[in-house]
Length: 439
Image (cartoon, rainbow, N blue to C red; front, side, top):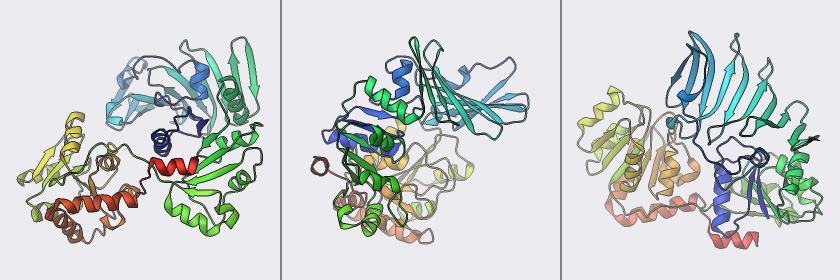
């Protein structure tokens, strides 16, 4: 039994965690490898390049080797490499980006076109390199071992894969064939495959030519009809396949367009989450932002002197934001440290998702896992799926969010009531539900 994921996204992590908590501690394989997979996730690239086990540290941005007199510039989001005024490279950081650990470096030619991407792993090695043509289309990716020897070559134009395995060179006509070979030589038990994509993982299951019983975990939108590959999966007699939908709105839509026979093969399951602590109803609210545009903050601060508002940023704060320091119930944390952020999450029981701009440090997700009551405006909300639907307010109605804060402060039992609603709307699952559906 294995988990076969097309990519290791947040949804993949959520499913992986839910399966482990429910007693399904399967080997987990990602068919895309960015070099920073968790230690309990493997890939064909890790297996053949020898990076499945290892030690070392990720490359810090200023450790990138560049020619003399070239300059590396960095922010908390990314880095850039310049030859005087000409940009020669762009540095992508692993998350959290403010740690400035290198995941990839794009290299540009004299005309400013991307021609190469060097990809680095969590051990600090350049483990892959991608080439691009003049239209910025990826043409080929090579994967290397610790000694820099080319082990794998993926041709993105033809779809072929070349494997240099000891003294043999193997050519696979497709990535699917390559993955099937990997699963066989690595010795995985393939009686059941849990997969979450109708692309390569589905095709691997379909062409595996081994009897089994599989589950497709589905989290994508559907159109007027079911995806074609899902219909094929339903009819796969060699490996009977059922579908578990993990977004409730999508599940409801799918039910409306499925036949009764198809509905019998489809179930809904939410996720389990690693909840950190209980909510004890403290009048402490947290906001994490890298923007000084915080919707309705002044109104909320002045109307709720009994609530302490903690505002943190991983950068310097503007004078506009620093001006809130005049209020006794506002505490500001410019250039906030990781330790302080962790302390604030343990201290606060309300999270206000009211900052404009991008979310930082997976703030809403972390608040959810800390069982904080999350409130937002419709023009600032970053993760609707983790919130009670009734706690997202029109930006023109700051008074409604303010009234919700008043309701919370009236009684600790109101925190418990709203937390139950928040978890219900997020469709938090149980181990018993997983075991009942999966068997």
